[in-house]
Length: 159
Image (cartoon, rainbow, N blue to C red; front, side, top):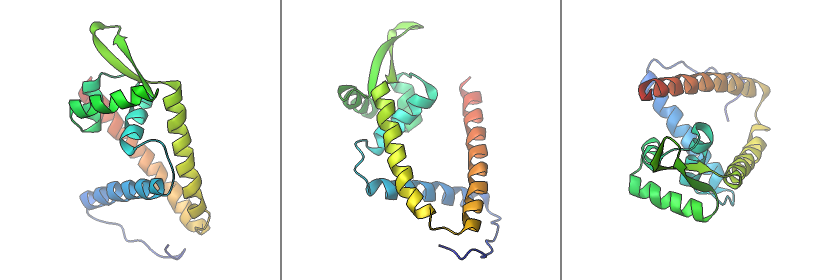
């Protein structure tokens, strides 16, 4: 942890900052998750979060969004369906196609996992000085704004 009054230099390199943001957030989630007995794998958590945010999707689109092969996603969906986390239904727009959607049990498990991670991380945040907590709040507002921009750009390219 940095002292409260430490000045942080602003980077001139947006790519380096972006890479650090991605790597740091990934490491944070993995580190905290590894401390807990969460019944969901990271792949399952990511898939369920996507289904929560996007609604039911075809396996091919879910695989593309998760950046994995369709056979790998089919295997993951099979396991999640067996565990009652997702349900396959017929696409109302194309009776030949199948959609995968999160079940209430899957969403509850995802929420429970997120709460456990947040509870664990909160214990670390409680030890931060007030100035760093304020910095974190401001930084999170920027991350939310960036996330909204990325989602809007993705929606525009898929429209």
